[in-house]
Image 1 (cartoon, helix red, strand yellow):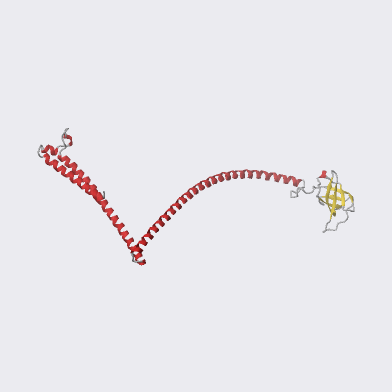
Image 2: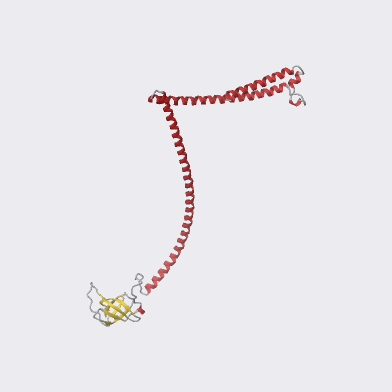
Length: 288
């Protein structure tokens, strides 16, 4: 049933109620018309009907309510008709546009059918495109969800890195305190080294500060000295040979050590033409 049919049904119901009330009023005039017409709800006894006047008031209220419903239905019908007219006008415009497009191509019915077929194919293509876009939207939703998960993971990582940074800052503070203590100890150690005539920049693996004499000297370039492993000499240490008065003689390199003596080879010195090393020459780390 359409909207017009519903409206007619409501009108029939309204007029039916009206004529029913009129008939009841006519019937009430034949007997005790005043009671039958004006009997209120409070005076109604079992088996007696409500007065026609209250019934009429109720019927009028119902008619008013039904009239309001009819007006609402009419307004809805008017809005729907306006919407239909707008849609019809839009469709007419689209139809005219399609007619002009088809007119440009052909004026025959066969080509119009071809145009309709093309429109259906375009609709299918649009539906396919829509399905593809919906698929892309689902994919983007998944990517957004993954991005949120990655963001949460990154946030947790940042929190962990922050905790680690705080720990490292605490370690740096402790290391700074240790550095101050070590710097104080190094300063005291340097004072001790300076008081004993030691240089802190000297290599640790260099020869110790020693002073001895040459015990034997041979023409093969080997010498025996009075210093050994007990004085801290090791293979590869280099010493200076000089005579009384601090005269430079040459350099030697230790090739073998014993407890109280060592064997060394004479090193060539291209910058200074040294004299041959002799017995009783002095051997030391440096010439004082």
